[in-house]
Amino acid sequence: MIAYNTDPVVPGRGSGIFVHASTGRPTLGCVSLPLPQLLTLLRWLRPAQRPLIVMGTRRTIRGL
Image (cartoon, rainbow, N blue to C red):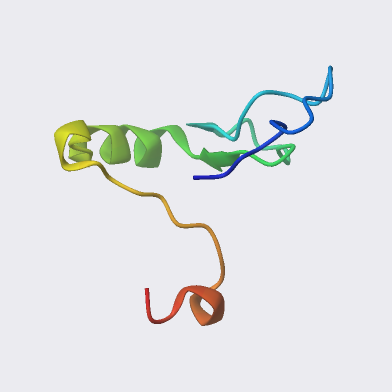
């Protein structure tokens, strides 16, 4: 879990890191995907299996 802006809470700094459709522009920390890829991801996810999204480079997440 990413404890983003939780201790202390800073007003105006957002409430989380989201996965959303890409607008073609950089995000402020979210994960954005082109709409077709986002739809594929949403169809593939099974919430009951408690999926995780890992952010990092191949080098930093190797071994997970």
